[in-house]
Structures are given as C-alpha cells and as structure tokens.
Amino acid sequence: MILASLALFALAALLGATLLSFVLRDKPTPKGLLFLHGGMAAAGLLLLIVYTFGAAPKPYESLVLFLLAASGGFFMGIRDLLGKKVPKWLAVGHGLLALAGFGFLLFHAFH
Image (cartoon, rainbow, N blue to C red; front, side, top):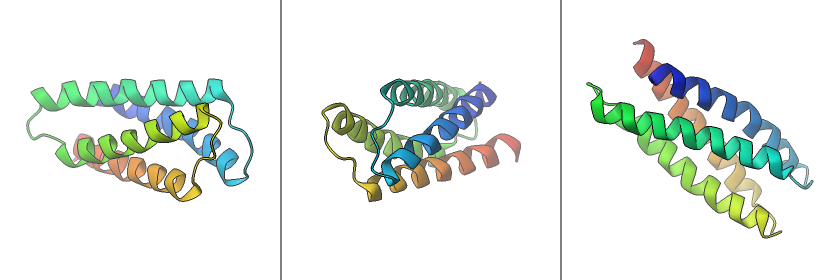
C-alpha cells in the first residue's frame, strides 16, 4: 500500500511541477491537469491514511506534511477555478511541503 501511495504521489508531483510552471509564468492552468493532479494526490493521501492506521511505526511526519500541502492545494484549486490569481509563494510552498512529505515517506518505506 505504501508503494502505491508513493507511486501516486510521484505522478502527482510531475503534474504539479507542470502546473507550477504555468503559475510562475502567469499563464492559465489547464483545468484537466489540475483535476488529475488533485485526484492523484488525494488518492495517494487516502492510501497513506489507511496505511498509517495499520502500520508500525507510523509515518506521522509524512502524513502531517501531506495534509498541510493538501490544504494549500485545495485553497489554490478553488482560487484557480474561481478565476482568481494563485499566489506564487503559496504554489512554491505547497510543492515544497509535498516534496518534504514525499522524502519522509521514501525514508519510511525503504529504511
């Protein structure tokens, strides 16, 4: 289950990097890509939550970082869908939180 979560987060990260490039260039984001990124990340987060309830030791650090990243991502997605500008600092921070969570999860999975 943790490997599936890692795979989904890795794919979401690739899509997220593409979305970030649109935000940093002040270009409109492709909404299909936005939904695909969010859906993959949400599925990875759901698997991580289920895994955390049954795992020992539990990857709490990763879960907290991904939950923080998800809240920022949800906020940005709503702003984007409403036609409002997404703050660049928030987009970068969202990505950094998610990457940190991914790093902790990789360490947990292969340590």
